[in-house]
Each structure stands twice: as structure tokens, then as C-alpha cells.
Length: 219
Image (cartoon, rainbow, N blue to C red; front, side, top):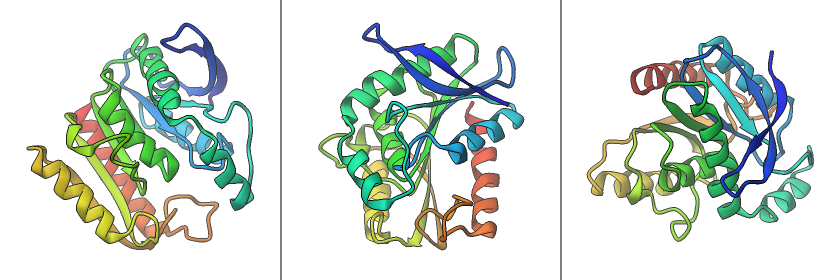
């Protein structure tokens, strides 16, 4: 349904992303990849959002690099310049969508979930954020500074975004006067990814329905 495009970053340079369109004036959504790269699975998520009525743009944060090997994915993620990705690639994607959309939101998975929190903190062009099992270091993106509607989906069997870390995230946002919508699932990390061994159809469907209702209300 979608196709690769070039779009402008705030610094004036260009970068690439996968754009799936629902139509002029429809709400926009920046879709952020997992640590594997901008693969067919993430492009499929963007297509699914387009079918649901959103103009969806997934930036290629690894500049064409892909992997299916966890060690290499970890290397690619650790090599990513997170501030540049947030302030340039993600903000550029949001600004590109604003040219053809109504309100623009952001969502992402795993590494992209952490970057969703970062975008909610640092990118002023966004109206809502949906995070799947990702939390960034607080010194890069303090969740207390989130001022837009925020929804989070987390797995109870997750040794990265642990239940304690999720509780702390929720408490921090609430202490700042916001009302985050946090959902917890009896599943493992990456439960939404149909290509993962952790994929849980029931939890993924429930998360999609909750996210769809949230985005419809906020965008």
C-alpha cells in the first residue's frame, strides 16, 4: 500500500521513510521501528494504520540497514544517535505529516517505544503518543515532561521494561499532573510482533483495540 519516500529533517537534510496514506486531511502517525530496522513487519504496521484511516510514516532510522540477528540489532541500536533521531528524523516525519494530515501522533515498539517517549518529550509537533514496551533513560527523556495524551502497553514478563520500571514510569507521569493510560499484559516483550516467538494474538488484538480507541479520541 505504501512506498519509500524522502522527507526533510529540520536541519535541511533529507532522510527516508515508508509512507502509507489514508487521504488528505486524515490524522497522521509517526511509526517507529524496533531494533531490527525498518523491515517489512514495521511497514506492514504502517499499512495497517493507513487502512484504519491514518497517514502513517515510518522513518528509516538505520538508513537502510536491517538485521534478524539479536547481537547485530543490539549493535545497530547502540550505534544510533538517539538525540539526532528524535530531534531530526522523528520531528521531520511529524512535520512532513502535518503537511497533509490533521493532528499527528507517534507510536513505536521496543526501541521505538523508548523513542516514542522521547518524541513525546522533545517533539512539539505531536498531539498524542502510544508506547509499546520501551522506556528511554530519564536523563535523555524525562517522562515527567510529557504534556500530551500518553498510552502505554507493557508486558508483565519483560526483563527490560520490567513491571517495576513501568510502575515508575506511570508514577512519574502522574506526579507531573498528567493522566497516562497504562495497560499491562500477561505476555512477554514483543507480544505485538507477529514475527516474534513472543507474539500473543489475544494480547496484540486487545492492545490494537485500545490503541485505536485512544487515537480516535486524541487525534
